[in-house]
Length: 370
Image (cartoon, rainbow, N blue to C red; front, side, top):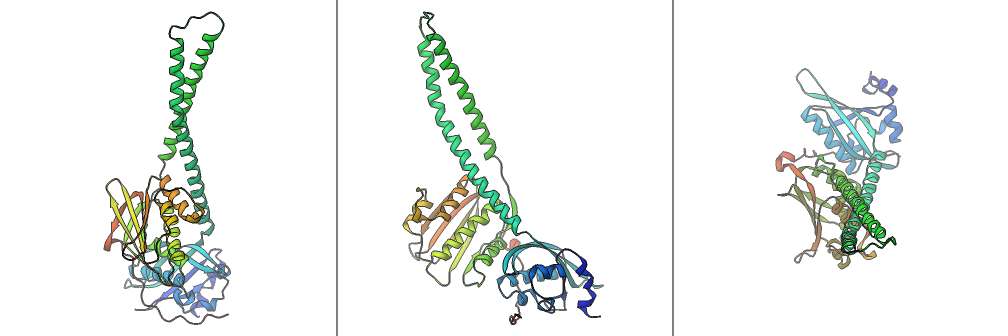
């Protein structure tokens, strides 16, 4: 019985399942890819058998998947991870759980994987964040308006007290009107206090997740630059902060750098540092042609203009809503752009402790069947 035949029972499982063989000193290669997985990928079994993920998906997507396969093969520990894969003509976000099988000597010789398409889940997560950003801005606007109303309401109360001081009531209803004005001002102040209290409660809500900055950046670059024309050097770090905000911010900033740099090949440096007030600072520098004057004005606190960019405006708004700051500048020596933003959070690990396993050398990709 061939390897492919011994795994035919997997075709009865209504979940994407694949199996990888790990030869001694070799790379994990597919030995099974069930019917459900093939239906989603839109490719025949022959595209997978005997090949590594880097050979099957001849892009950065495949090399990223192979890196995870090798990581589990080396460590002998199960792993759940997320990455992008080209499936049936579209790039999808996939969450995979990979489990190793060992022989009597403890060597990993086989990997079993199950995958779940979470593209819509990720889109819904970003949509919720966009909604939350808009809602938070509305809350802030209401809070500012409410705060500004406190002073005139206090003036109305003070004016009522002045009018009542020494006022002679002639029974013509004027004292009742003054008391009514005073009562309206007092009730309005209570409403304003309620609005401000509600806003404070909304702002107190936070969502922090532990994640690998290198892995997140690699995922973003896989999406924006699948041909790997550009390079991003990242400070290895595990961060505890709002992962979705970080992902959207970095995606927009890296995309903006690549789009407007005027270079076929870009070099970017992404660094992170811990600040003393329980915040982290992230800095992205590139060797492009720098920010336009309009973009610099926007990122450093100016008002929105059409020529400053909607994406940068959205990033600034999102970070400020979460209590962070953002500034931008151009290098006086290289002319490249530098942007720095802060967010509430912690650096959980840094340096060697946070470096993910390196991708092993992969064989030259083979021509894919058509």
